[in-house]
Structures are given as C-alpha cells and as structure tokens.
Image: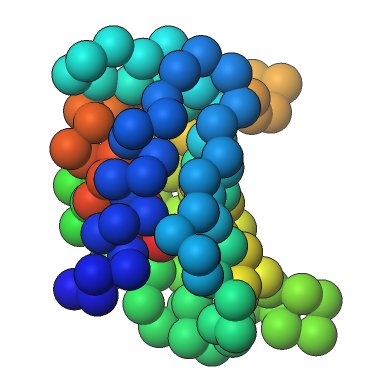
Length: 140
C-alpha cells in the first residue's frame, strides 16, 4: 500500500464531523457526506475520492477488488463507457434490497448505497467503522 493513500484516510478520519468533510494528502482528495460520526463509527451518504491522472481503464481494473475488499462485498463492473465519461461498478442487492454502487470517471470515484423499491431506487446512508472508512479511502 502506498503511504500517500493511507495518509488520505487518516486525514479524513481526523476531520470527521456531521456535514460535508473534505481532506487532501497533497495529491489525492476525498469528500465525505457525513450523517453522523462518533469515536468508533461513521454514517455516510456519499464518499468521493479524486485521484489525478487515473484513467477509466485503471479505475475499472482496480476499484472492484479494492473497494469490494474494504466493504466486504463483491463488486463487478456493469457498464464502461469512456467516451461518455466513465464506468459503473455495483454489488448485488442484499436481503434488504440494498446494493453498493461506484461511479467513476477515472480520476473521480464516488460510492453510494442504494435501496431498490417498487418506484425505483433511493440513496441510503451507510454505516462504517472508522477503520473500515480509512481502508475504503485507501482502496478508492
């Protein structure tokens, strides 16, 4: 693991509070939409990591495994359209009809959790331990 990635997760962890939280390590940056945070865990609506210079192909090659490992859930690429600006990576819906989705433009990767219902889908908050959040930022 690159030290710069670990540092970004630590930078975010030190700034966690309710609201939109930004952090950078001087190269990469992260933005988290935080619903709640305490000393052990956090509840997020969205997590976005910006990695300058990363291509869509590089993101598609690394994000499913790295993010899936951090979340403890397998993810797979469901759409790649570099000419339209990116790719979509998803997990399978669980028993609550919720699933993970990562949208990437290459440089940017955005994670959300979605719940499927009769009228479509809605983004939902998701809990993570602070340790898992640091690992997730490293993987994104």
